[in-house]
Image 1 (spheres, rainbow, N blue to C red):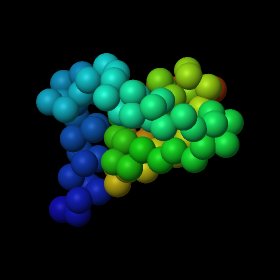
Image 2 (image 1 turned 90 degrees about the horizontal axis):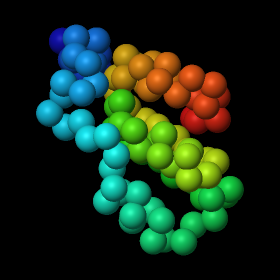
Image 3 (image 1 turned 180 degrees about the horizontal axis):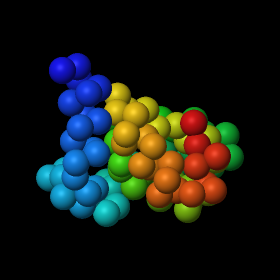
Length: 92
């Protein structure tokens, strides 16, 4: 089984709240990003290993416009897109 297959299997089998690493909001990450004083329209932010993280939701809610989520799991990315609904079109 490849790493991608492994993570797809986990994300397909478990609800996002059932994984041990889930947290509703990544407050430390948000505070660090906010403290950098970045321009919300032009800052390029990438969430590496983002999975089904809600960081992208919170960044969009704060007005960040150039957000990318990268993950090995296509299942996780698909589920994040589904959760974001129309907002997913503004995320890479």
